[in-house]
Image (cartoon, rainbow over all chains, first blue to last red; front, side):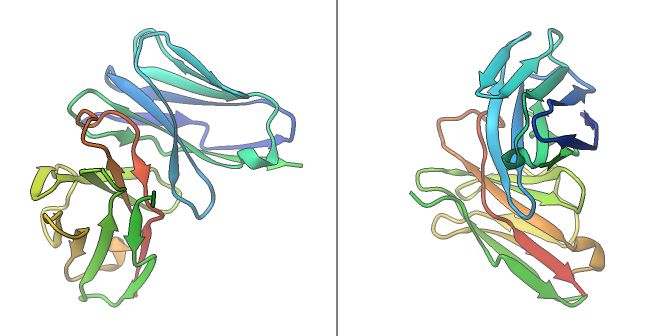
Length: 110
Length: 117
């Protein structure tokens, strides 16, 4: 079945450093979504990407969808302590349920 | 507009007991999804329901687990004869009817954390 892999599993950065998490799917996706989950919290939707090669920005966050629609990345510029949490990608091939990666847990040291 | 409401937030059961988790979707939403999350893991899809219909239950274990979304009232995830391996956070998510199946933003509740002793 469809698998979604995320790397790295953990990332510790100094406040102000950049952060990137990568997501790879075993199958071509129709869309990919990103969610953020704070410690002890619930997943909160960040964005959805649909088009091949799409790039979207939200303030310090940049999301990319690969040309082959099998990979994606999330880049955070100049991390802040409020960025702490686990970032999940989730993809679907159309009529299949969203498959979540295991997430990248980001720690930011002030 | 209240978000997705889940209760109980925390539930402790002994092996062999039953667990019932409830989820009320956001107002105007008619699609409900249940996901399970183990510690340090991602979310695993369990079931997708609309009112009075199970649309996709491909992620549900074949035994002991069932889900419903009646015409009136919340969606319920029921786990019979719980075992220690059922300990997890169970998240419910909803989406509006205009969204296609398995597309678009999911709005998650705060989860129900089940501990089986």
